[in-house]
Image (cartoon, rainbow, N blue to C red; front, side):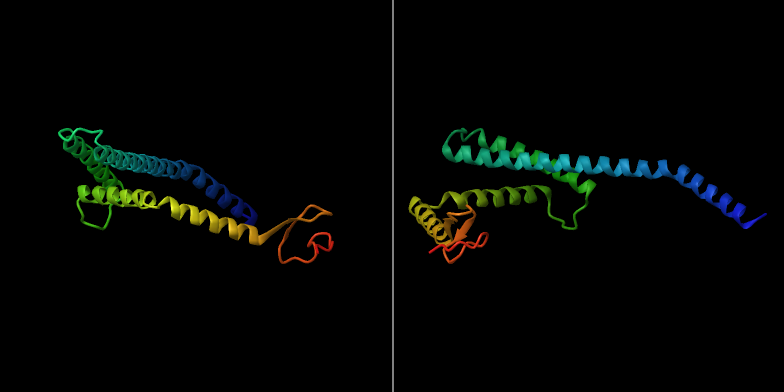
Length: 167
């Protein structure tokens, strides 16, 4: 046998091996894709439970939820969140040994803190921030070149595009 025929036979064997092995790799990809889809669905459900907890706490503070119903609804949401976190732990184990209820309570408290920090800014603070922003904005731009219409800065003496004198 010649070398070219041996190389041809080897090439055919490699191609057949790749053809036979391809479905096995695709099944592994499908399994991983299914797990990641389930993982993202669980994370989305966890976020919905956290938002529901925040809304329940907010409504309770406003007096929209009766005091006798609040503990039951909160416990049900915490239990649902804990179940979701257990499923998440089964799919992607976490190195920490905290229990699920404490983790969801911590996440809800962190989200509550984020939302409440923005609500404590007074109107005077907002007005001063707006005035400061307007001052910064007007000091940067001087408008547009009268010849070509391109934007120019206050510090420009000539248009950077066409070279027309701006003074």
